[in-house]
Image 1 (spheres, one colour):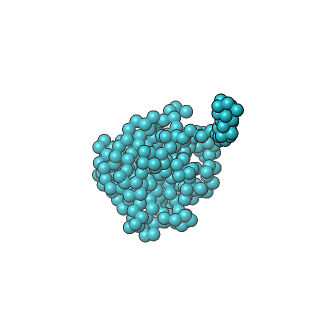
Image 2 (cartoon, rainbow, N blue to C red; image 1 turned 90 degrees about the horizontal axis):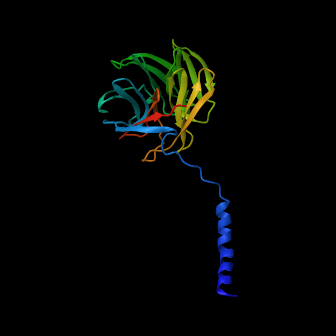
Image 3 (tube, rainbow, N blue to C red; image 1 turned 30 degrees about the vertical axis):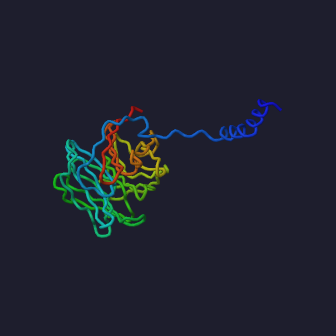
Length: 266
């Protein structure tokens, strides 16, 4: 056998099985490094002390963030200047065993925040705060953990632990019904925008999505996937706010950053 034949024999023995093995592997799914179909417009460090971040919302002048200090069993709503991102003030929201403030929503002169025990199937209060004074205007007690809340024109929608269910309340705070989450997405923050319920959450540790639902039919209208930050934190892990096509996310604990994305038109 000549040298060329020997080489071909060796290749056939060792290389062909390797090629077959490689070709038999499924194609790797392309990962999302940001927010699907969105461009990153700005990243700002929030200049103040935050603990485990839970929710975010914005008005014309301020950035508001909730966080929980689990070690000391305390929950807070923090206010930052929208232009400078510097801390301005905060209010403690702890209510006995309930010290976990969640995703929240601003509506007019009110800020609605759920404050719950830090465990599923527990209890919560939906707290209405005066946006100017941060004084408590109203409390609604609920016999379940509530982790996020959105304001509609008719009342409130609140998600329980991982938003497996949504509690519906009228404007007087009366519970109307409870509906199941039609998705496996574990929504951490929800908002009501343009007559649609928008939820941001996680599917796995490194994959998540933002979903738009028609209300009250809960028909899924749109979904965009989420990747992770350069610190390895899922963008949709915690806090989300939406104003038109402007998407704001605060996925990281302190030192926390506010990520501003601009969504593509659906």
